[in-house]
Length: 421
Image (cartoon, rainbow, N blue to C red):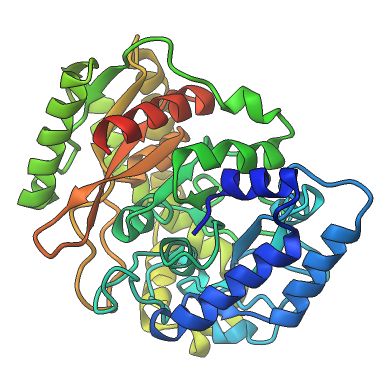
């Protein structure tokens, strides 16, 4: 499977077109998706028509020829959007989400809608892990991560409330990037938590993130395409709940730290500041309270069509007192200031992307315990593959960057990718 940059190079020299790349994706989907179930909606003729329209346009955008999977939590004007729920089966939005419109304006092809868990929460969909179909691909961005991992599409969109980009990327052995909160406009996204939800990107290599991110922000690709001019300074953060990491993940983390130091990095252990611990403990009060209010219509009018797991989450969120919610928000604001001040000269902090390998079975999409703090702190996060666990499934390491430090984090990510590869 060609990456985003490879496709852009082929298009630039005339050896590929949007139509030829779209056909290649559709061929791979036909061969692999029966066993994986990454797609919620796919219309090959619609996708090819969109690709031909791109090729017929007078000017070619910076993502011309790149097919992208769209998580079925984003509105699309020409494809149904069900948000992973029977309540919205066949629902046809009138407009594209802002991020989808920006991708199309940049010349990308919205290939189809990828499976999301119910309303991007914990109740799983049909998708299986391409590395072993007996295991979960993670969630909530299940279909997007699986589609990129299986080579069905070079890039896909996801969202993260707690760990829904970083964890599936790790489980599926690919690169996942969650930028700073608000970096990508959320209009047209049916979000869970207004304080947390962030749009993310799945690709197969860190170098493929800058052209996609640039299409969303309007910045030049070069502004995200930096190279480190020094060996990185790394803070090793073992997590507020380190005991939840599997023995294989702990060993992989320590081994990664040794390998990065051997490659020239300066590494230091990061103590857990009490403000970060408090924020971690209270973070679910914020997301739970906001989830319940965001889904007030479904709760009061379509409760019988909610899964038991989602209904339980809403009920729990409705029971959270406003005073407790407000206090938790205050704790997060304190933690954001603490993190920014404690980051110092570090280029990034290193921590696991997940507790371990993808769990067996499809009943659970995994534990976001190593993700949710960073999401609520609004900082950029990057997951890169880092070996395998005892079942032969991928492990991932998570790089945490400073607030609004996407370019710095991506540069560090390319260095780490090379050092660990």
